[in-house]
Structures are given as C-alpha cells and as structure tokens.
Length: 299
Ligand SMILES: Nc1ncnc2c1ncn2[C@@H]1O[C@H](COP(=O)(O)OP(=O)(O)OP(=O)(O)O)[C@@H](O)[C@H]1O
Ligand SMILES: [Mg+2]
Image 1 (cartoon, rainbow, N blue to C red):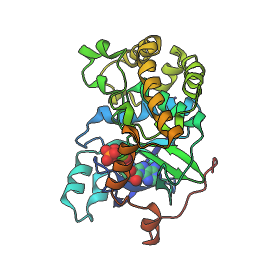
Image 2 (image 1 turned 45 degrees about the vertical axis):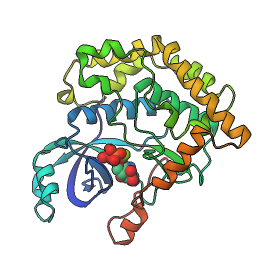
Image 3 (image 1 turned 90 degrees about the vertical axis):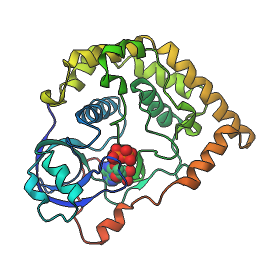
Image 4 (image 1 turned 30 degrees about the vertical axis):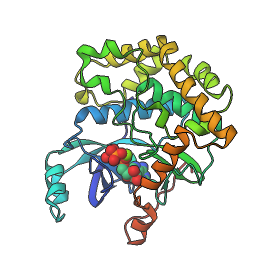
C-alpha cells in the first residue's frame, strides 16, 4: 500500500539546521509537514531511504512520525525571499516526502532523557542492519516528544544503494562509526542487543520487506524494489558479521557506565555535547505564530 498523499498549501518556514534544507509546509489535511525535497542535493535516493528505513522501523514497532507524499506546487515559494528555497521548490515540483511535524519536540539529549535499554538496542539494531550512519553524538536524529523518543532522518541509511553494482560487497559490512552511536550507552546492558537481534531478525522477512518497499512511490526507485529486499535479506542472513562489531562497541560503552570512567566513548560523548549547535526548538517557531497543533491518534 502506498503512502498517504497530501497537497501542500503553504510554505511556512525553512528548517535551516537540516543539511538538505527541509521545509515546514502546511498540508490540505490541516497537518504540518517537514518536507524533504526531491530536488535537494542528496537526491531521490535519500527519499527512498527515508521511506524504506522509516517504514521498516515502524513495522518493527519503533516510533516514527507518519510519512506521507507531499505534492508541491513550486508557486508556493513565490513569496519566499530566499533564492535557495525558491530554486529548491522549482526543482521539486510534484511528489516529495513529508514527515509529520512534532510540535515542541527537542533533540534527544542523553544527559536529559533516559531511554530504556530494550528500545535503545532495537534502534541500534535497525541502524546496524540498514547502515544508518546518521545517529551520532553530534547529530542524533532522534527527537523527544510527548514523553517518548522518535526516530527521524533516515536519508543517509542504505548508502550502498547509490552504487548497486558494488552493493553485494556490503552485505556483511559493520555500521561505520558504531562507537559514536548516540544510543550506545543506553543500549549497553547485558543481553539487550542480543535479545533485540533475536526478536527483530526473525521479523525482517521477504513479505514484510516487500510490503515496506510497496510504500515507496514507484518512480522514485532506480532499481526494482526486489533489489532492496534482496540486499536487506542478505544483511539479515550475514548478520553474525556486523552484530559482533556492535557487541564489541557495546562492551566498551558498558565498561564506561560501570566504572564511571570517561574512556574513549565518554570523551566522545562530552565532545559531542560541547560541540552541539543550538538546535532549533520547534516550540520557538510555534510561538512566532505558525501552525495549529494537530491531534495525533498515537499521542
Ligand atoms: N518530524 C519532525 N518534527 C519536528 N522537528 C523535526 C522533524 N523532522 C526534522 N525536524 C527538525 O529538523 C531538523 C532537520 O531534519 P533532518 O535531520 O531530517 O534533515 P536533514 O537535512 O537530513 O539534516 P542533517 O543532514 O543535517 O541531519 C532535525 O534535526 C530536527 O531538529
Ligand atoms: Mg538530521
């Protein structure tokens, strides 16, 4: 089943801290959507990764804001003073990706918010499976909203899909930068990751992956959807290789937790915290008088 389709009725603001210049847009459904544009430098592949990994996460019970296709008329950018935004909208006429905007959400801060080891381990497993390199200390791509953790920004995952000719060489690859994964300390409890692995690996089967790929607009795909299904199944099959690297990284994070010593992971943690920019607080934007809050069934 395809994604729900929404028509954008207003370009409200640019989310400038996002590398791909996502925009906040109002939809004809009265929703507010974080729109990732097809014409952005990251290309259409990033949108495919957003849908595949976001919907896979959802199918595995992880919290992801609703994903829709947002139909954009570039004329909505006419009153936007920024030439870059106008160009982006012009290059993105038609179908783009929308993520339900979580008003008042804040970027996950490991010092301020506790994540259950089971949840942390499941997110870590998903990222390791899909080679999502974008969940680091500096750029967690996790939001806290409504008292819970939400996963966003999966555009950098599945990066071997940018070169299918060499993708078979990546089926056993370890998640690059796993030691910097922002949920590593939270997941570092005995057996949490092994349990997540045992539970989730059994669910990532051909039927589920086919249903996930079905959600991607067909004309965004550069290869038949089966190619993604095959690659992901091969990663599940070969998971002993990448799982062990995660378990090793978890071992050092757990040591830091137990001894209270700022080892390598602890230092990275502090450096990440010190270097973090002042993230845009969605609430600040709301106070400037933007949108009406949406009622969410799952709030
Ligand atoms: N659904 C959402 N609700 C509220 N805020 C959001 C949502 N999605 C994204 N944001 C905010 O916008 C920022 C940019 O979004 P996102 O990370 O998806 O874009 P990006 O261009 O891929 O960014 P980058 O490459 O810099 O990580 C997020 O860090 C977050 O602060
Ligand atoms: Mg991001």
